[in-house]
Image (tube, rainbow, N blue to C red; front, top):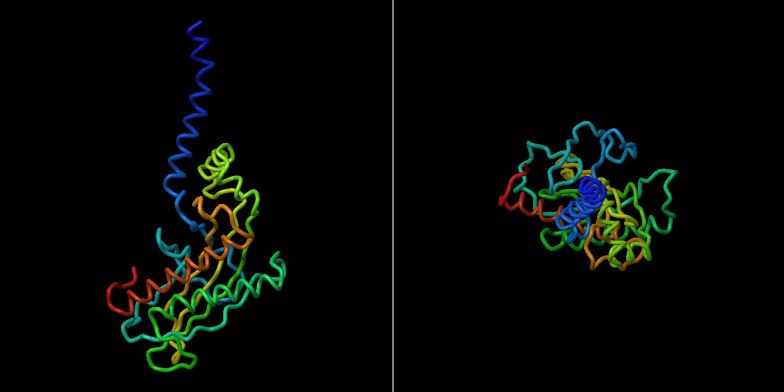
Length: 241
């Protein structure tokens, strides 16, 4: 009898062990607004950056793929010329033309707002000017109603946590993928290039949102991270690693 009872209890213990592990995973990422998703260099085909061969995987708090020119003397730069953001999703994209324009405008405004706090924004090339070109290459809308239920309703959140533990992403989230190139505005020398993809994180405060909320959060994160890094490099407070 004891052996029989032991066999019937074992699956239950296994289930709860899985839930516990998923909960621990959620604890590590549940407070994040967005999370980085790996991007395979072989999958890049938009052509925005042209040559992708120099890109290498970024670290935990860096873009998915990146290249930083090791010869750059960053302290010589104190101005940024920001080009209009464009959409390079290709003919098979599911994002409508109207949404493409709205999302590109949103990223441009986010970059303008963040960079403007640390650099002088200019519209002409000159000494000390970095030119930033950025493109959205993909965007995915969240499923608003189901996104909310999956994050707020306890039973649904438990299942969503299990999905995160298995796949590394949550259900019904949206996100965005983009590419950026930074050059010397006069010489055209490449200073840095980035490719990144971010999707919605597990933060409860962002559970109730509209279709493009996760994509917008990803773009705000890009603008903030880029500004922080460029500011630290040009001020001499840090060097690229």
